[in-house]
Image (cartoon, rainbow, N blue to C red):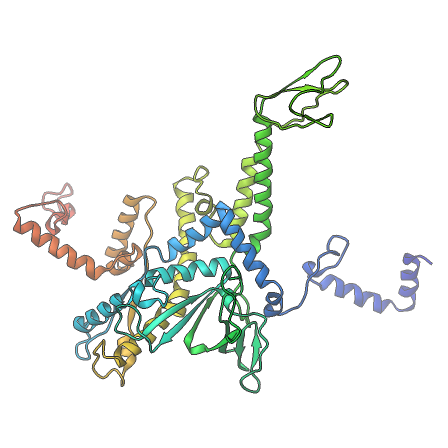
Amino acid sequence: MGIQSAWRELWKSNPSVIQKKSSVIRRSYAGANINRLTSNWVTNATSVDSELKGSLKKLRNRSRQLIRDVDYARNAIRCIVDNTTGTGVRLQLQVRKQRGGKLDQKINQQIEYAWHQWGRKDSCHTAGKLSWDDITRTAVSSMVEGGECLIRIVRGEKFGRSNIPFALEVLESDMLDEDYDGKSSKKGWEWRMGVEVDKWGRPQNYAFFTRHPGDTSFTTLPANKKRHIIVSAKDVIHLYKVERPGQTRGVPWLASAIERLHHLQGYEQAELVRARASSALMAWIQSPEGELSGDDVEDEERVYDMSPGSIRYLAKGESVHVPNLDAPDGQFEPFIRAMLRALASGVGCSYEAISRDYSQTNYSSSRLSLLQDQQAFKAIQAQLKDNLLQIIFDEWLEVAVLGGTVDLPNYQFDPDRYRQVRWLFPGWQWVDPIKEVQSAQMAVRSGFKTQAQVVAEMGGDLEELLTARKNEIEMAEQLGLKFDTEPDSTKVEDKSNSPNSEDGT
């Protein structure tokens, strides 16, 4: 009995069952259908940590290899770091007086000066190699490259010229042992890829290697030294992008583009070899008797090495077949652009930012691309502010006050008053400065923006700008100089209300 005959018999015996099954099939999602076109589509209902457990190390190593060897990958990480932290993230204290609500300039300047002094590389970094600005840049680049950045807070020890017993140790993600399976500290806690979490999934401890597992070219670990060190979560900043609930470790940002970039690297290499072979003009000579003598003959077999402009002899009966090596052809550049657009989408940047190719854009498209990039960069900056900058500052201020380096009245009763900070990230240059300045001017005059917002978007500080502007004007007046940038010259006469206007009003 064929399948159709079986269905007819089943329909006759119980048609309601067939109608019910048909309605279920019709109501299902097309994306969940299994047919001959989707039969090889394998999916698993695994947790994010289960997926990371067997893939994290390989993803991290491949991501680093691509960033080392592929120009586009290296430029992608450079683009993200330059646009999020740039030359450094500055802090501006916002501590206000208890009476009147005005900014307390004396206290603000005291804290800012102490922070600036501590931010020198010999003071803030345990190894004495990274300044505070370097640490923020390294944190972003580590997130992109390896998926996460680990910073250990070291208290109780002074480094370099610092009077504050507080410093930071920057660790690669390899130092956190994803295979650690030690005994849990408390009932209900568990180790997940080197991180001990409680029943809520909140990190409690971290299992770090005492030595980098890939540091095999140098001195081996002493026999009496422990393989791991357990560090409390209150002393560790684990910076990574959470993509799914319950995620314990970070994923390299190139993860979705790793395979594509690997094939692109091979394709470009093949095209390069093809182009070299195509450009190497050679000639072959064939004699009636053939020829097998000379320095390039070994065991009566000719040893060939092709080089541009070379002339070769052929043996009797041999002929030459030259393949079509017209390279690079017209498909090379469009294909590279298509691949780089996919890479840019996976990383979170625009194609123009990754490739540095602006030949396909105009002012409108460039500005739209820039605005979209800026939104992505602002999201990264917000993550840095909440998960790194503010946490480090709060911990540093606590130690600075306890050590007597910073004198803050009644800090122990109201510490939040002194933790009010504005983080100033670097701004972005305009595509068309004239139009952008006019737009900002109209926004401020209309009340849609403040001057502080406009200056902050440019990476500046309004307070410093106004102070510098005041000093500039006073100095010009003392020297008897006059420029068209002085405040009086910016006044625009409103001719519409003049008695001499054309309408006579």
